[in-house]
Each structure stands twice: as structure tokens, then as C-alpha cells.
Length: 187
Image (cartoon, rainbow, N blue to C red; front, side, top):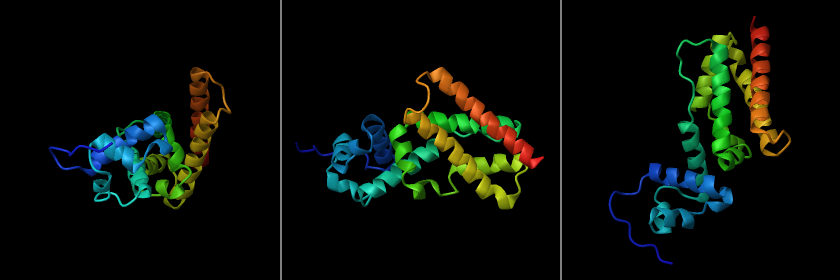
């Protein structure tokens, strides 16, 4: 089936990434191909290569796009404990909204290692408020991320209750344990 010529504004990276995110949300990583994306955008598949050089580059763009769009708690003067709980809940919600993307990111660690991403900057800000010394920020953030990502992996792999309310209570309890432990270690 031939794709009809696109009319109107030129294709943008934002349009490409937004459409690719939707396709991955609907059909997973395997449901995203340059051909399917081009069909959704009503362009020739080769025109995508003017913006992204390969499917790997496209997947990296999708991951960066979703990471940048993730809601993070503002620096609103709330206690660090509340901000850390809010960040964990936002991260959990984001993982549930984009499970294919979240799964892909966590099997490609280089995609989450950019400490300039808003989630890392927000976590560092909260950890500083909690009293974590600057030389320990990286180690502490890695531990917290591994703990929360492990919880989400256990949840998505079916190692927890099927009851969403029970999962929410368990997640809240897990984050509270993290908060209590962090408060104890920095006091």
C-alpha cells in the first residue's frame, strides 16, 4: 500500500516521537517499525531517516521523550519525604502508562544513565534536602532507583497480588520504608 504524499507542515521530531510513543503504548516494541510509523505519519518511510538514523535511534528518541514528559514534583517547599513519595508515585504511574517503553529502557541501561534527565535532577534535589552528602548522591540515587524499578518489575512480571489496591498499598509501604531508612541514615 503506497503512502500518499504528506501535505502541510514539515515533519518534526516531536511529531515523530509522539506518534512512536503511541504506537509502542498500543503494540509494544515489536509494534513499532519505521514502516508503521511512516504510515501513521502519512510519509514515505525513507523520509523518517532524515530525522532518525535507525530504529535504535528512534527507540532512544522515544525513551528520551517519555522521560522528559514524565511529571516530577516541583520544588514547592514541601518536606523532602513528601516530595520523594510524590516522585516515586509519579515514576510508578509513568511505568504503568508506558509499560513497553519502561521495559525497553530497563533492558538498555544506557538510556537511563543520563543524569541530566528531569527525574534524576529531581531525585538529586530531594536527596540533598534529605541531607545526603554530595559524594553519596550517585550511589544513593542508584540504590533507590534499583529498589523502585525492582518493585515495578516484580509487579509487571506477576510476582505480586493482582489487586491494584493491594499493589498500591504495598508500593506506598515500600516507599515509606525507603523514606524511613533514608531519614535514619542521614540523621
